[in-house]
Image (cartoon, rainbow, N blue to C red; front, side, top):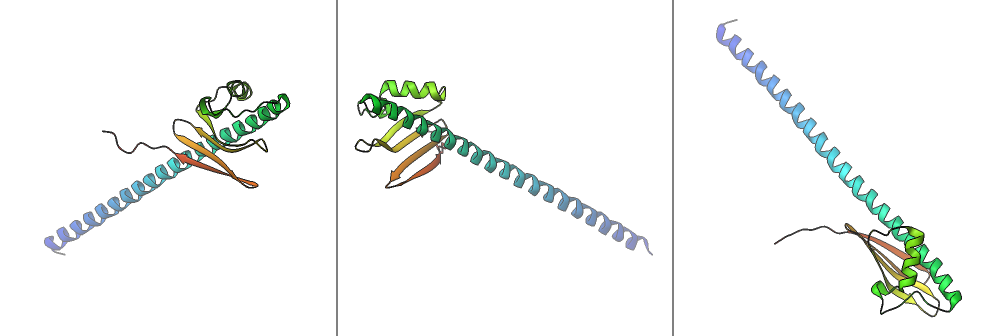
Length: 150
């Protein structure tokens, strides 16, 4: 084997070794990026489910207070109050729930049947909306995301 063939072989070995290292680095980076994206998605959906659970608990508390107010001949719905919820009713819900992180608004109330037909719970990062059409209710969770700042 001549010296030039030996140098050529050594160069090919180094190139193959370098390619193999670059492939390993690329695979490791791809796995890391996929893991970060998966973790962020899991975290986002976990937080959304948590906010949905909070909103459902608030709705249940509002329905309990609504029943109590019905026995007194009153309604929890007050279109002049903040969030359309009578102040005493909201205070009672806070006693049941503890401190509520966001704002709660009644967006719909059937005064004939004394049922909540619309509710909106807004926190710092999420908005949870409840609407009722007929017999079934529908929950929607939206994420609030700042896209541009000027």
